[in-house]
Length: 255
Image 1 (cartoon, rainbow, N blue to C red):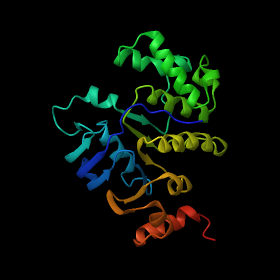
Image 2: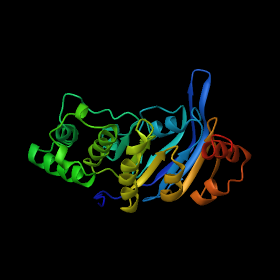
Image 3: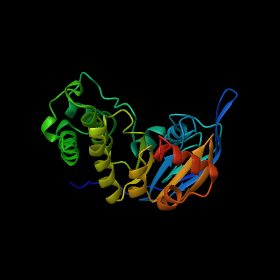
């Protein structure tokens, strides 16, 4: 199986990003750059700000200050066309967010038809193509409740790809899956990376990050503590906090 991405990959520039909820400052001056076609994995303990950072990139959350640029879009500019910007950014969440009353095919065609004004035939052709790439074209007529968790997440990825995004954001896409189905979803993401899709991935799958990521960013308490090549950050971290986190993740029993 191979992924197909027609859109030109977009780079991402995040500069001094800050986000607070009341007195709780979740992001404390984050700066990260992602080159076009690069895969960057965000790792760190729960509550470190990874998901908030991801949601700021497509303005599901409004940062308090700082700057974000995705391709030609100045995301944090007050006059940015959010609809046009979000057409270029695909996002896959922990939960699948599929419409339960629609078939798999309908879930994958509703946005292209409503947002891109595609006719039914065009939208269905593209949706079936993406479903084929994730190995689910034979299940196009089923409802989400008839699928396993791993299958639903693969549908969510196919749905995002029907919009031909320039950037894909993944927020712990395997955290809600059974261990047996994690590999299927990671394989799709691996194919996307090999096809040149720009990706920012929040993940606890250290093996995936080590294999697929061009760079790994370790976050703790709203700050970037360490970043670099995956082999360096995961295999030979220099910051004590990174070392402690990876020791706990890679050897949870302390053996």
